[in-house]
Length: 296
Image 1 (cartoon, rainbow, N blue to C red):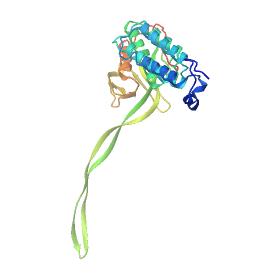
Image 2: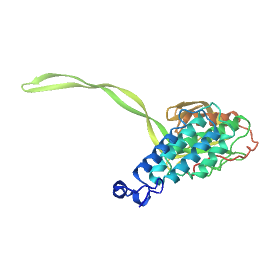
Image 3: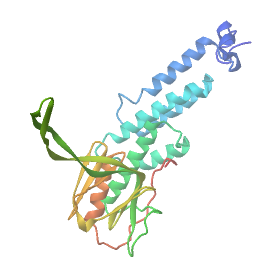
Image 4: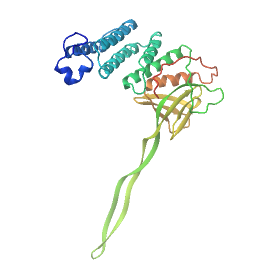
């Protein structure tokens, strides 16, 4: 049996490894895989150009077909190439407007789903969020079909995403020890006096409030989950601060802040700031498409 690429006879390696089913010899298989590996890293040291990206992807698919690279080998390398392309798209402070439909095109072409690698889903989410922010800053507010909270009159939902809730609790414990003295009252018997000498200490701890969906509307930030639900009107919001895994909203007359865990706090905080800065504006936001992965 001859190799379908070079025409040489398939060797013992092809038979033992099961490659005879693909009809490709060891040398051609290694050559094809090496080309895919080079293409997968081509974007790392390159400047962003959408035409170059299309060329890399087209070459990748041509090489995979020509050398009959199995799907289980080609798929991780393909996702590596796509991940590097997304990094180039995200690199500028402002993503080019023409790149948003390009990302949407790739999402449809490669059918990104919940089963896609995490770095791909994360990149799609970041780009989609930045698209919403950039359009919003230019006066085009996003729109989301919020199914969790009951919207008030003239309330519109701009954004929603999966999130976690943290509840701030105060736990009290006592520090100190026993202080006592003893003295004899009769032969073999001593009387001990005194007792516990300590002081109370209040400790702030964070407990999990479960997971749910965070909704950003023109009136408030809402978290809706099976265990707990929280609604914070913008008129009561004093400040919003991000940290490594989420953000905190401080409110008036509230000792317990709203603490939310989200994928990219720096982006969600921008969305909340945009929504709160226009609080009270009942004009309907303009509709537009959003990049999605098909995953929740």
